[in-house]
Image 1 (tube, helix red, strand yellow):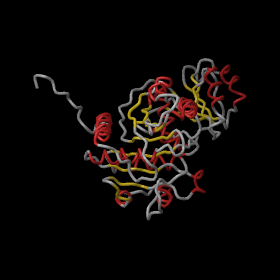
Image 2 (tube, rainbow, N blue to C red):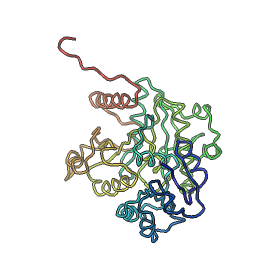
Image 3 (cartoon, rainbow, N blue to C red):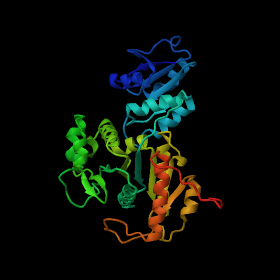
Image 4 (cartoon, rainbow, N blue to C red):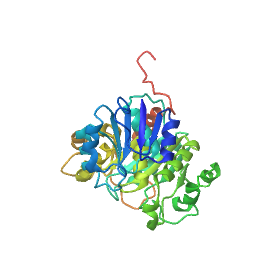
Length: 354
């Protein structure tokens, strides 16, 4: 299938071509006869939302992919719904070139054998303990003998109580220039057996981060570790959060039953990126704090699986002081995680004749 591209930047077009697709770049909309049985990819900068109905009518025998470029989490849900009603595929804002390639493969039902090593942690709200839980998993995966890098990618909170010699904002010039080397990762903060990159201390630069920078950092980290743990925080309106949703091999939601009202829009937002409740594992933090809704009922309502329930501990502790039984439960989940990433053999249960 040919892809007729109208309005896409050349870098993205090149990435699509490198993925094996045939792309025909257009300066104007092609004739409908040209795209019959093919795909037409257009951007919101070239075709406004008000012209989508006319576009669909003009190209009845073509697959249409609409790349919406207006940033902001509030503005595009209705546009996505409108595209669905017209039979038009939708790409949300902040999507990277690799995310567009993944969407094309999804549309064309191509099989992918790519296996990543990125485990993303996302919170359902500030203060829910996303950073603490990410550090817990990093510590236990490192204890299992894996090389682990933990990236602080909550752009609104560095996740560290003091400024360090290396942090996300200090590393950013090398990210922007695509100059990262193995030495940069060797110089990360050593903490509990893993390498840690504290997050962004420059709060004024939060909205300046670009998706391509974060994607590049994740790719380089993946080459220097067996497992990359990333703390993407709880604020969706950041380049890192969006890239994390797109690129993570495993997605962990750290939440609590009292955040039920937050989970609904969060799951809806994920749906616009072709992610669904079954694509997430939930970690219930402070599970021993009584609420009107139980964790089990919460998970049943949304259709997600609960990976782990952690009790409440006093705040401002560097690491969660888990008991022996709780720690063993975490290690069991860590082993399952490593098996899913292809980094550990499946555990064979001992039978009566073994």
